[in-house]
Image (cartoon, rainbow, N blue to C red; front, side, top):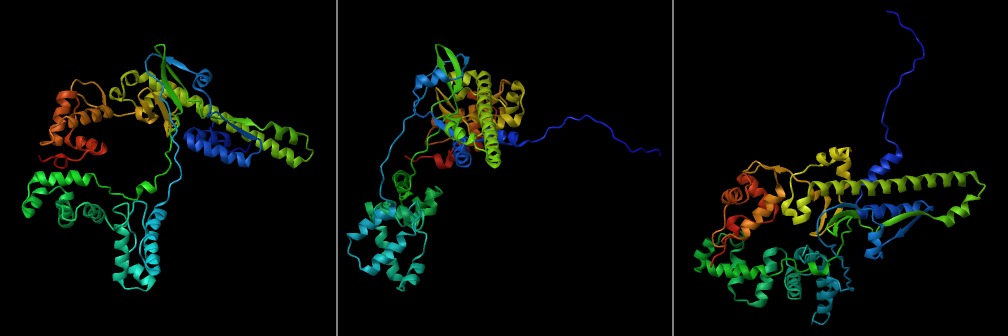
Length: 442
């Protein structure tokens, strides 16, 4: 074999993952909140960066700065109203204020404080009386008495060790001799599983009486401590807006709240005349980082706008008449139309929101699988769920429809072909119980 050693030239094309490309991909995938956090952190690291917040921009000014793409539809822009709430006492403070006006010894107050500090955010006790008794060197009966005292405080049901006890405390407060209390105390599992005929036989009462108890129990609070732990409402900031002006559909950036990245000119001018090489090297690095981030943000905005515009083009009926007219569509269809990779579409819609005349939705809402229909037309899972909700809303509450009957009605009324199992899956996703749990007794 004749082998020669030498130098040869070979031309190859290879895609390499640069730091800038990696950062641009990450920025595209960020939600609005994640992008804000990312920029706030970068402000601490890079003194050249400066952020301008457009949160007070008037609607008409925002519209003037939008880069819009036109299509036809009608609708109005949804208004966002910020709610303000004052500081309220914590659950611990609220319970202690009631204990302080009660007639308890210092030892009892100490034990009750220990109990209160072991109540979770739903209002349930997460420590046993035995543990408290051992920690405070008192008989368990004394610890139990202190726990009962807490359970008599407001909000009613507080300090319960489980759901049954929580509901019992509330029922007993309103009427110690009620049928509701008796059923909750002696037949809780049968009642919860809606095996009411067994309860009716044991208690010698009618199903209608049990139905009345059920309606009453529905009015009780299963999480009595939750109102003290409610966080301030979190508001969704849309990334894009779909709106109508003069019969034309516009897909545009949502500018109100947009953070615009700038260079800190004062810092730059101050440092530019520096003769230290390390300082100049630092400035070059931070300037390059600013350019990378700035380009990444602009690419993110452009990509999200392009993707949402194409979604609106492919789903016109959905924006005219609502989500009930959502047709099957995949991310691959959009990526093929825009000549970009499917993963780019996936990143562009991940945790991004669009404001429409019908409300604010995640962008990924508009992608849905195809279902078989009676007339061979493609239909979406969203359409099937809307049809399912409508049929169940109109069913007889005394004789609710089984999943098999629902499948038949979806076929006859909506032209949607679904198996019984798929109907059950969609029903559970909608949070709708089975027919036996939906039945009412009059």
